[in-house]
Amino acid sequence: MNSTSATTRDRTLQGAGSAVRTVGIGTHYLRYSTANVLVLLAGAVSFPLLTRLLDNTQYGILGYYETWVMMAVAVAKLGAQHAIIRFYPHGGDLERLEKFATNLLLLPMLASLLLWLLAVAILGSIAWFGGVAFSPVMWCAVLAIPLMVFASLVQMIIRASELSRLLMVTRVAWRWLELVLMLAAVIMIERSALAAYGGRILAAILVLAFYVRWIRKTLRFSREAVDYGQFRDALRYGFPLVANEIAAIALISIDRVMLKGMLGDYAAVGIYTIGYSLAIQVSVFMSASLSESFIPVANRMYETGGAGEVKALKQRILLPMTYVSLGIGVAIASTGSELLRAVSGPDKAASGPVFAWIGTMYALYPLIDIGAYGLLLHKRSMTLLKITFAAAVINIVLNLFFIPAIGMMGAVYATAISYGFLALAVCLSCPRELLRLPDFRSLLTAGFAALLFLLALRSSGLFGLRSEWPRLFASGGLWLLAYVVPVLLLDARLRALLLGWRKAKRGLAGAT
Image (cartoon, rainbow, N blue to C red):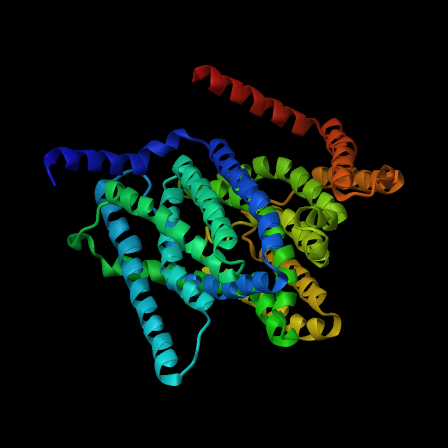
């Protein structure tokens, strides 16, 4: 490498570690939420098309293997993604950045590839010598694992660097590219889960080519920087979170495996997956944007200013978040089934109650995610693992009783109960100096406005409308009038906050 290119790389490295401090959490949240809105828009296009192009059985196959892929990826990452976020060397020291990249990205990725190759060899031996015919979709799922691991680790480095603009652009580009290629494969080749998976893998390969180029330009690795002690420390911190992630995936997705095993029907899995997939979009919009912008900033504040600054940050976030969560939650609970029928067609109506229950749960859970965030700041990853594992066990046990008794909705009720346990246990375990839940006034105001909306919905009868889309538009109008307007009128703090954001936005635009 010549001196000019070396200097350029050093400047890029320096920028990755230090230049991001000019951006605040509000800007990060705006970028992440914008990205998630655009991702959701892609979902709004793909979800109704795929649910119409693929029958319940093919959609169930996608959901079934996706569960196993998520679990395998969680193991294969070796917890490195959590260590990247927690131990990122803020400050821009080039030597520390080089050691960080070598020991927390390169070494975990190499170890992950070795594990993957071993697993492929075992599966290949079973297929060759044991005469077992694995599904082509399963082999596509196996191929996707190292791609997803690498993407996750790189995205965590971008996120830890607080380069939210880059992460926003690449995530949106990936989702829309995936949408185009999956739909093209399903429409032009075959209406099957295999074709859809092929399009997804091709999109991942194209995006990862860009990530490789970014890594080569931005990070530096060297044999001299290898520090197995740092690598072991990262694994020691991350391994409990690997188990926690697996438990979290089991909590979210084990229902699909159990539905297939207990009911013996991919169609039931498909009905459940369709409703759950739409609910996941709520989680992406409500929780992902917030956690991606909140956690790196909270980590930095805790390291530099202590628990008081983190708690003050939570207080600023929870005021508007309480009104958003309860407002969206009551809207989904009351109109979620109709929304799913509208976007997926009447033949997918059975998935409506799944979305109404799970979507409401995901709308409310960000209040716990933010208010009770503290265990990881205290590096108590084992405590978090025990809580998540207990919630997953509760979900599995309840499924064993509920699914045979009441069918697919038994899995829905089991999930809701286990998430309720998870929320309570996380709140009770959070260190007191970091716990900050929504204040009583905002909860009371939001609850009153939600009740007002439900009364308006019931008393109006939605004006006798019969078709789904007109009913949804009418419900949206009532929500604005009966929920949003009363909230703004009753809480002057929220009005002042929105006015402050508006002035700050104008000032930023003027400065630009």
